Amino acid sequence: MCQYSAVDGVPTEWHRLHLGQFALSRAGLVFVEATAVEAIGRITPACLGLYSDESERALKSVVESFKSQAGATRIGIQLAHAGRKASISRPWEGGRPLGPAEGGWGTAGPSAVPFDAQRPAPQPLDAAGIARIKVAFVAAALRAVRIGFDAIELHMAHGYLMSSFLSPLANRRNDAYGGGIENRTRLQSEILAAVRAAIPADIPVGARISGSDWREGGATVEDAVALGHALKRQGCDFLDVSSGGVVADQQMVLRPGYQLPFASRVKQEVGLPTMTVGLISRPHSAEAILAAGHADFVALARAMLDDPRWPWHAANALGADLDLPAPTGYAVAPRWRQNTEEAGALPDPMLGAAEAALAKAAQ
Ligand SMILES: Cc1cc2nc3c(=O)[nH]c(=O)nc-3n(C[C@H](O)[C@H](O)[C@H](O)COP(=O)(O)O)c2cc1C
Image (tube, protein in one colour):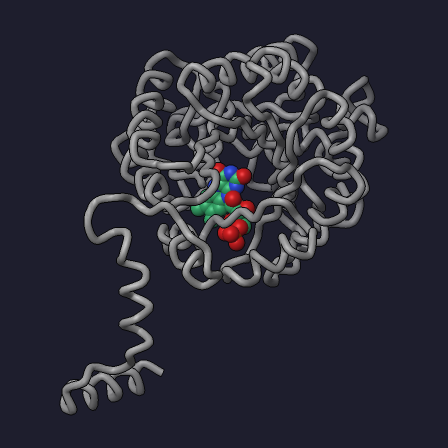
């Protein structure tokens, strides 16, 4: 998840601490946030980027810390290009478009169609621009391999560059990269093929794709299935199905598991290992999704920020064993917590009454 805490693309101590929490989480796989493959592909000037030696060195150090304590947890990186959604301020600074005087830059996209009325139109990518971006993805993937990442996910969702090529709402090209679905999936297929060919076969390369633009005339789940097939032909190892973010006036319907039908359809039709994400926070819900065969992985975003020990608690709730960190106390902490909660209110009559009063006041 984007932390907006890098300097010139280079991770800071924040990243070491932030990711360190998840090194102890015992999650199966942790993905580092959307990491730009070139400077103008960052969403904000504070986004992570993997286009310099300095960033590679600093990220390697963070990943080494992570791996030194992570047990069986694997670490991957999401490589991204923000396209026409780049060059804005951080969310807590308003997320508004930045002009050159404020450190902003001109953005790139499939066509000169802006994301919304506040933003300038992107520069449509020409053949040289497309070639440059492919090289940038390959170079960043090679850096990721040198750093020691176990997996790479290419960001093809949320309206960023590759996702905007899929969407007829953003892509109005009439060359080989626009129009029919084969053309609207060409850039993504070429980038995946180039990355796949450049890195060792034992490092999985997958893609986060979009199940819907949630807008009439936008990309649909049929487009997601077509993209999935195209990526599979190029050696894609897994798919991660999200949605939305292509246009400002989308009509998204949010409810637990709201993106699961897209993942399930993509998994069934494309047949690649498929991840689902979105408003899943209960261990039993995650388990039910896997047991029903709707997805092969469940990704948690906000639930893990809220509770980086989520997998410990999920293992407890589902009766699974986890190899918890050895230092004294950690291995018994989840069981202790559960036993304490089951024991109920504090035994002292006065404290017990105070606790009940506090609980009532909080309702
Ligand atoms: C603060 C924040 C940062 C995010 N950063 C990314 C990102 O870097 N890459 C990405 O694909 N999705 C990103 N997302 C979307 C999440 O990965 C996820 O798809 C979404 O939050 C829904 O899942 P959840 O309900 O488990 O949070 C971000 C979401 C939030 C709230």
